Image: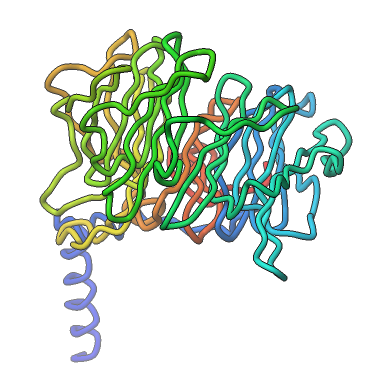
Amino acid sequence: MKKTLFILVLAAFILLLAACNDPVFHMISQEIEVLPPYISGSPTNFVIFNGDMFIASGHNLNRYRNDGEGYIWSKSMNYSHRILQIAGPVGGNLYALFLNEDNNERYIQQIDTENNMPLVAANKIDDDDIYDIQSIYSANGYLFISAGNNDHYDIYYYDGINIEPISGVSNAGRLNGVVYTSSGYFLSTTRENNTIGGIFHLNTALTITSVIPDSNIGINGIIVLENNTSVVAIDRNGVLHNVTPSSITTLGVAFPTSPQRYSSGALAIANIEGEKRLIAGRQDSLQTSTNTGYSYGYLDLVLGIDGSIIDGSSFREPDIRNFPSSIGRNPVNSIIQGPCGTIFASTQKNGVWSLRTQRNGFFSWNSEQQQ
């Protein structure tokens, strides 16, 4: 009898706890099983090219395309060297930054996307003048190459045929983003101590350059809004800035500071539930919220109907089922709305994730699976 009574009291206690509104219990109730990712490890950035989406992880380049019955993933090629970054289109082609793990050499090579994506040997960028390649980005059909080390950086551009150094940005810092508008190119660079770097403006002919005053503030992400003229940059602390060819000004929009959330530099524009949103990845918070227990994932910002930043708006926690227990536990390095409309995220160590409605009937994040 005593044993039966104890069990009944224990069951009532558990039910009472489950019914309470404590955020920790609510978070636990929202958890769903995290699935093994189809693309695992530490994937690269996403690139949409000729209507398909590409991302690499390790030695594999992956393709997301419509086979006539819907979008599916395929591992199109396994390369002998590790892929660090992809970029395109450049001269109508896709390029990848490779690392030869045997000798630590980095090089850039074109990928033939029409024939199961083998390399195009004739289009390997290994100019002796370009040393220690750090990153690659594409904009308006050009490939921008950042090369050097902590002591000296140079930036080059490549049109698919010729490589040229960009004058005026010598020792500018490591390139972390490039965007293009009708007023020209904006190149974002940074260094660990931020003594050199900033945002550089190039005219449409890629000949005249100037550093934007006061832009040396640790910018780590840059994007063009949907009107294709407004350039927005984000710094390490998650502060948004408006960028013009001659100035940079804060927009009065920033990540929460209690606790502090830091920007990973990942930025994307997406349409979610009828709203246009600016999504910003975050990583390595030094504090953990007592009511959620997560410190990564991303924050989003509702945009105006025309895609502009709304005065007085602020970043918010995504109101997505199981966010704290899923993508919210992962630093997001790249995020994109794919050609099928699904939102995808590349995490630091746990592969590719997606926001879908097929899982348990809820609109939720989980590791991306082969569909």
